Length: 190
Image 1: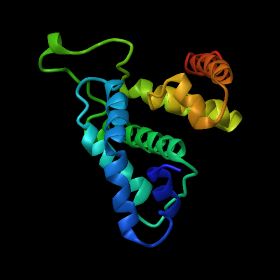
Image 2 (image 1 turned 90 degrees about the horizontal axis):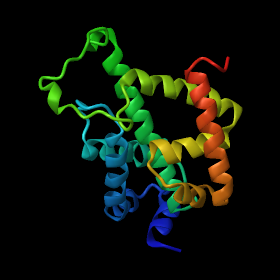
Image 3 (image 1 turned 90 degrees about the vertical axis):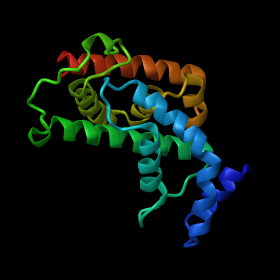
Image 4 (image 1 turned 30 degrees about the horizontal axis):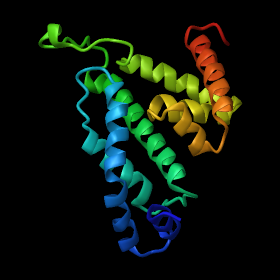
């Protein structure tokens, strides 16, 4: 049993020192996960990887609602989900009228803007989140594959290991989920 797994199994106790032992062991991997998530965001994202890691860690370990994690993979899957929710919350906040959601955002230096398939607008992210929530109600296992692979940046092999499934099964789930979500976002699935 790894040191991380031992700490995760003891984190439910009221000893705050146990949670303090966890962060140094997982910090670099959480930062890598956060950088992967932020790389998929539109340019102009004000949230930085360090802030995303800290917010996600506080949601996971801080407070009164602490979960127990079976192993390291389960913890990182929970961290990925927490980061996804933070980014969705921020996209909703940016789209609110109070924060200029109705206004067109114009970069100060358009020739420096990064574009490409990895950059998703806040509207696209919100559409995907809405479709994913609906898909999760229908098929939670395949929705988890999307969360781990797309939002967390896990490879399909890492997703399979975290979920305890075969690589072939995860590949089939990924193809199906991606097709379903695309159809839903395009309005082809009602």
